[in-house]
Length: 312
Image 1 (cartoon, rainbow, N blue to C red):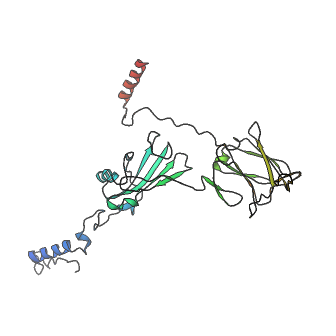
Image 2 (cartoon, rainbow, N blue to C red):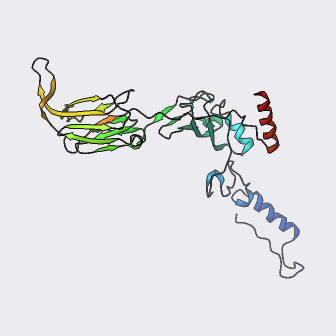
Image 3 (cartoon, rainbow, N blue to C red):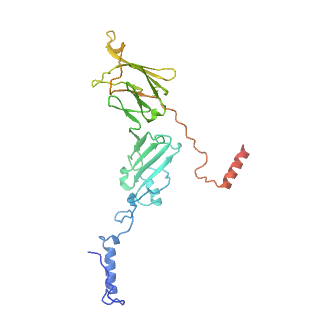
């Protein structure tokens, strides 16, 4: 039935309009017919009429919900905390980890997520971002009370595609071409210098040297996995990396493909040698000894400093 409109009559006395009873009937119809928006409560529960900002719709800025303690929270019991704070069965949150909390992929970073209560806990998720921005991790529940393992997300920030088209885990990466180098952001921080001494003879200066954790050099290969040029490399005492490339030859005594030292060759056009550098040491983050709940005033700060001086 359509929305009922009250007839107010044609005169100030209401003559010709609805009676008190007929007015009440129309009002009841408007507020009890579930096909009318006017009969619904405003909110985020099933059957409610949503307002601007519900579930983030139409909101210009995300609401600040503060820091939520999720250290001991499982996929569903966080709901009761959020319910008393913001209302609704769905919410987003974040938590800052200061290095003291176990169970996270890294010592420092931030966590974001989405939690659902009831039997829909499997839709919950958490993403942890490391403080350097290179790695992110994701996990989801395996039950209503237990989180699953963290899984690292591999992106252009922490991987490289080598000369052969394969994705490799990356820290500082330099692509060595015949006449130049290309450094990713992390390698660029070391200000590497390239020098071509002669045909097939290259120097990489001003770096931390080869990575000492995992792979550190990858040669260009053909479709059958054979190297395109034979490569010799070493790290000098000043951490300069020396790379030499030669034509290949067959060693009849060992059956190996070895460099033909009499025939230096440049790295083929359009191909490169991947070199993984040792990462720069990251500065340690100093965590304040002041309790989080301590909010000093000028007087409180003065008293605190005086007591500290007396103790010393």
